[in-house]
Length: 355
Image 1 (cartoon, rainbow, N blue to C red):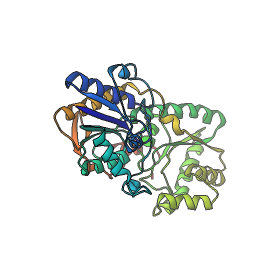
Image 2: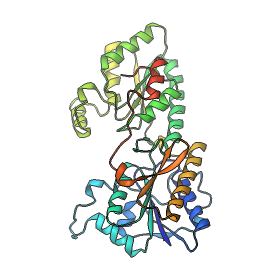
Image 3: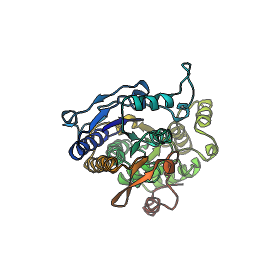
Image 4: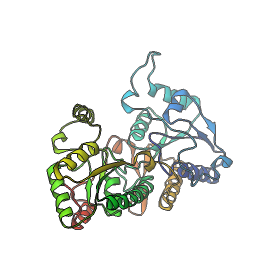
């Protein structure tokens, strides 16, 4: 049995841990199995590239950041577009899946990866997904691997930024990742004791935030820490798509929501305001212990599904159980923070500003 495995989309902590767990479990429990590592995500499958991953290749990678297979982004919208050679990327993937003699393909990635995996399933390929993203926004699973590691990095970063903010008596805007969903800003903001948290699901009115900041300062606070998800936006931008928001901000001479707010807050309140963008530091480095355990469980579960002949699904976390979701039921859907979420209630009861 030949099992392909790839990592697609943005990197995050824990990818290698999943590869390791899936590979070891397959080798230990299926006779005559071969694990074929496909480089650069779906890009490698489009090109028909792959090489055998033996047991030695899986050794020593549990705590290694990044992915030994490499990764790339292959936009879902372009998959069925016929190129100059008369063939779509999807058609090439299906053709190479068969030419490589694969019996199944493990697709490790986020929402886009799962949408492409659903296309492969539709075309008759056996696939099993594993949910990865630091944004924690994949529909149908309680948690994705990489999320907790990113929360820990963001939390420590906010802790460090606070000492500078207090030393200089500043308002600090700390930008986390999270374009469509605010889970990372929400969790790390609460864990680091941020005073305000801004997320995509709750559009912001700038003057309300300024009033909150002024009230805290009036009470003697030396600093105000604001965790901002990259997808956070103003109420005036709420009806705009991402590209439209970018255009509007460019017209204002700004690039991000944090740039806008820093200028606005300083102008309206008079308090020195600075920004810090955490960026790719949230993706890199070794996975935390929680993610190492989760990745090991997810990789082993993917191998179990293959051994059972259960294809066209993705592994999902439901409470303490690992279950299977049909790819077509979750592809293209996102898990958003809701106003009724327990973490939102917790934050508000602690006095954290949330719109």
